Length: 231
Ligand code: SF4
Image (cartoon, rainbow, N blue to C red; front, side, top):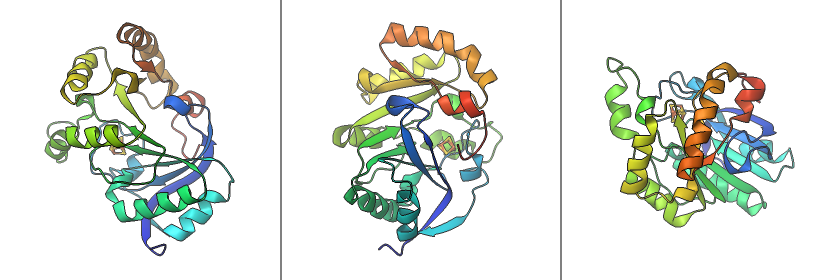
């Protein structure tokens, strides 16, 4: 099984920029390919024009563990679309005592070894333009209530929403009731790929979080490095 091959895009040691472990030194392993096509995807090299680097699970484990870092973040793209490989990789890292966060768009469920499932279900603001060939597939596939429920039932979770305008709150509250999503797991983050895009959204988003009792998350990697890769 360790000879399984994964498609990946990058591997680097940095700090976690978002969510409950913001600031924690972490090794990021970014898988390539995604089943969605967010219009503002901040890693288009894993979705719109996916990079195609190949690595065995054994080599990935070796490369990840060379940093001797407790926290590992497996991200994408969408890691769960390479489910056999992800299962094996997470198991190997778990056996070595690492804390594993898996970041996912929450459209595919599989039982894996993870300490935190960091879901980021995509709101309407992520839809590509209606005349784009991915529009229908993205709009149909972006919210999978059963998948979100399964993760919530079986793992420690956070549910991060990327918020573009105050109007997005209506959709978030509908999902919170429909799925349902416990309010204390909800994290709101401003949409933006450079600090100048984030900045004007921060103040009103903090006010929304105060009012609704949601956690606000900065996007520290964007604030520090903008859209630079591998940091
Ligand atoms: S789910 Fe994530 S990786 Fe996939 S298109 Fe959206 S932002 Fe990009």
